[in-house]
View 1 (tube, rainbow, N blue to C red):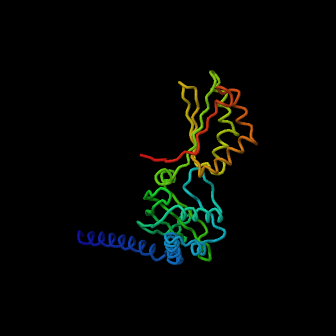
View 2 (spheres, one colour; view 1 turned 180 degrees about the vertical axis):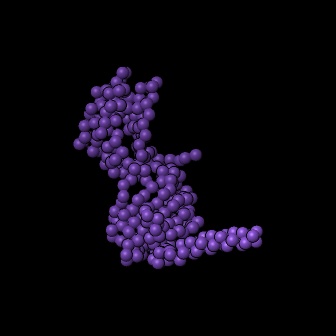
View 3 (tube, helix red, strand yellow; view 1 turned 45 degrees about the vertical axis):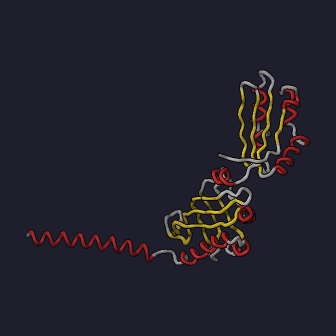
Length: 271
């Protein structure tokens, strides 16, 4: 009886093991038939990026491409915006190289292998303007249409960290010396829809920060711009076609003299 029980138990264990092996085998054999082809396309796109071969890169991409970047608050970008992004990286870096930790098949929202490609790895290179070395770890995905072209692309990495680490900065420093007990009036104007939110959304503005010094009753606004030329376009608009500066002047120490703008500033360094 004990022998029969032992034999029965072994049969059950063997059956369970065979079932587990079959599931793994079925999973591997049911991979999407387009994955190998799409993987080759994705890897070629990255190699062409290293070569800064924009024309051949775009031959792999659908004109209906949608791109999602790691830039904070960014919206889904179109094909033209994707092209501009590639051009920007080609212009900004030399010796671009991608080292993949792995390439992986992607799945649909339902968890089915859909032929898409994902990769984890590191981009390296040298920023042309600063000479600083890039060491950017991240995750990238590529989805494909029926023709095998990339229809959707996205990335996940520390975009702000990359900008701070290797890109040059065009910093503009604005000081607003406020009359006593007029801080709140100026702050309300700065925080209004037409104030600093409009500045931040203006073409060329990368970032904007503000602090208030209680001892000097002064607002300090620090903006990082793509170029001082773009800041000048913005400033001309503020001075000739907008009313925000005019609204603040009555609350500034000495009127217009209470507004001081320092730009262009050169020799930026970080430590």
